[in-house]
Image 1 (cartoon, rainbow, N blue to C red):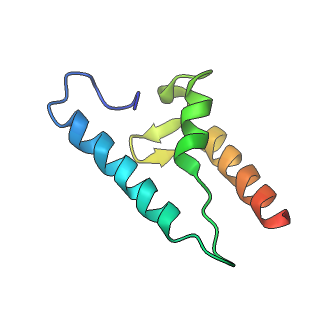
Image 2: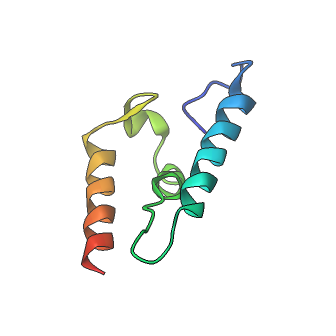
Length: 79
């Protein structure tokens, strides 16, 4: 989680909450219900670009990252 400062005393709490949220969403998948895992997508993008290049603030993507999300959603709906 590049957008959370290493000095933030609550970093481990934030990271575990985000992972827990992703895990809960994955458990909802069943016939006719799928999950677009934007967390893993974002982590893959962050391997090439810094978080600050992809977000408007710690909670919202900028236009670059929003386009990635839109492309992923479009691909998911086409399958």
